[in-house]
Amino acid sequence: MSWNGNGGDQGPWGQRPNNPQQPDLEQILRAAKDRFGGGNLPGGKLSLIFILGVVLVGWFATGIYTVGPNEQAVVVRFGKYVETTGPGVNMHLPWPIESVEGKPKVLQNQRIEIGFRSNGSREIDVPAESKMLTGDENIIDINMSVQFKIKDAADSLFQVSDVVSGTRGREIRDPSLLIRQASETALREVVGKNKIDEALTSGKEQIETQTRELVQEILDSYRSGYQIEGVQLQQVQPPEEVIDAFKDVASAREDKVRKVNEAQGYSADILPKAMGTSAQLINEAEAYKQSKVARARGDVERFNNLYVEYKKAKDITRTRLYLETMEEVMARANKVIISPEAGRGVLPHLPLDSRIFGSGKTPQQQP
Image (cartoon, rainbow, N blue to C red; front, side, top):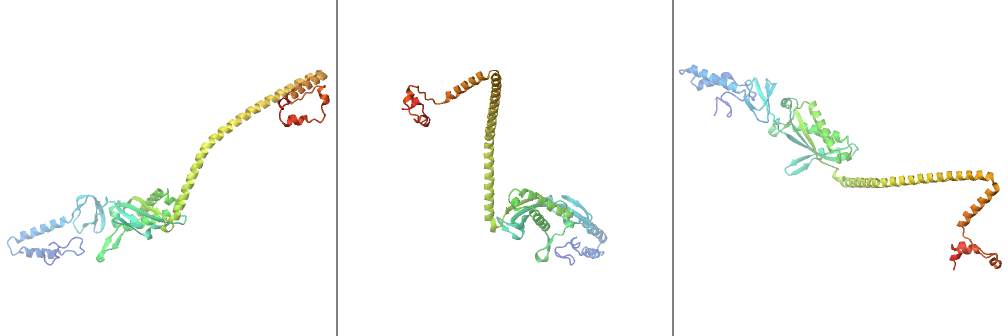
């Protein structure tokens, strides 16, 4: 229904608050007066007062607004930020004095992807984002996801401009642009400080933590109003062209670790045995030492005693020592005793020594 030339979807009291064109109050009153009979009808004055009351009520009603459960409303007064309100029915001064600039979903977690894009059940690789250079000048392929949400509704609307061109020349706010650029920048910086082995193995958690902290630092420096909830490395691997070589290196590294573990196990087994054997040999050597020292001291004491006796009776002592020595020597020697009568027919060159000592048998053992 058309009201005095206004748009088809507009009300009789002019255009919506967000429309830059301001309503002509005089034109509205004139249209209402003509509509309800003007001043020619009885009670026209009362009708005009009623219409003015309706207009005022409608004007004050422009200050009533609702905020969803996971939203916050940002209220501005003549374009300047005033306050942020929470969920429920709220009120601000009527338009155009105050208005709601936006209602960001502050409790909604959002997600962006670096190095790939999810398309249903498939993932599309984005090499321009995923290929990165490590600290030891190797190329690595990394996919990462970032979870974030709005922590300050006003800052998210006013401090950072995330506007991209949309369809039909319209501009669309896309907060993920800032998060994506900051996340990719932070990830490249962190990866550039780590070696490729750390990125492929035990350093993933450290890279995630450092990246999250650096992204948050960048966003806070812009007063973006965004909070990074989490950073997760989805895939970390060498480029496809060299992945086989990296697998060989990883296999060799595993073999090295296995060999080291085996060597450590052998060391743990053999060292106690070697230490036990060493202690035993030391104890035996110490006992042998004590025995030899005691025997040497005994021999010295015996020699001193003999020397004392020798000085008292040299001839007798010399004869006794000779007999004792011969007794000791002859007791260990192989002997052939021939009586004088039997020895007369024996030739002097008879090789008795060879027969006895060469065969290793005593005369009684010879055939």
